[in-house]
Image (cartoon, rainbow, N blue to C red; front, side, top):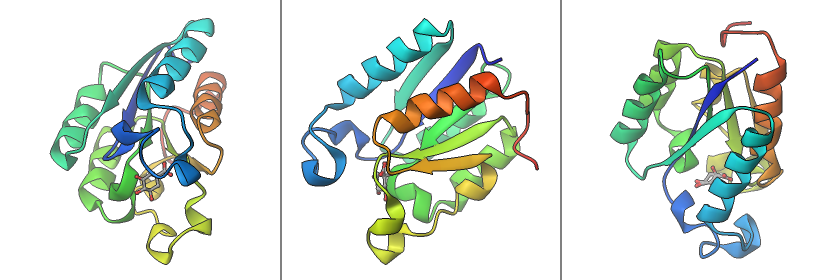
Length: 150
Ligand code: DQA
């Protein structure tokens, strides 16, 4: 049972609602924050929803989660596809982590098909829009597993 979950959104997710609405939909980033916080609140979970356009700041968030949060949900945005540093930060803290993508990255350009960060997570949810975050919350809330290892 997870009490505190850190939700990290990476670069350009602050542009939701403006950015490529055909891919990401018309709802804004504040709509996403409210959706996650309200869903978590109903389950008695405290979700802290953070966003950064900088790789270093995302790494600092991940380090801060250690000892302060029970689990992480991360949408690393485009860093998904090339940030070994975010992969290593997730491996360093070794908290139960689920990677979420709003879009189905496998249906899109070739460079989005690979996630270098997912191997440091329990699993990945993609293509289900906002719902991916609440499914990740349910999983982390219901699962006993406390590490990213098999
Ligand atoms: C994304 C998918 C990434 O490829 C992209 O760079 C993003 C958003 C998603 O949520 O679908 O910024 O992570």
